[in-house]
Image (cartoon, rainbow, N blue to C red):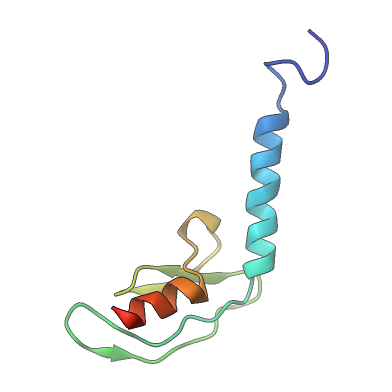
Length: 81
């Protein structure tokens, strides 16, 4: 079968392209302040260029993995609950 057939690498390439684009758009996104599971308050902090805020509502850190991205919208949702 020719290009674009069922064994083509295009679906994987498209997935990788979306992941890279998401990481570039979100690059430098700040981690907002949060309260950890022990009730301790942690101030917000900036992530370096091409990294973004990752983690959970109760633990945040900077990373480059777009699958661990914690958007500012998700962070604000954590503050509400």
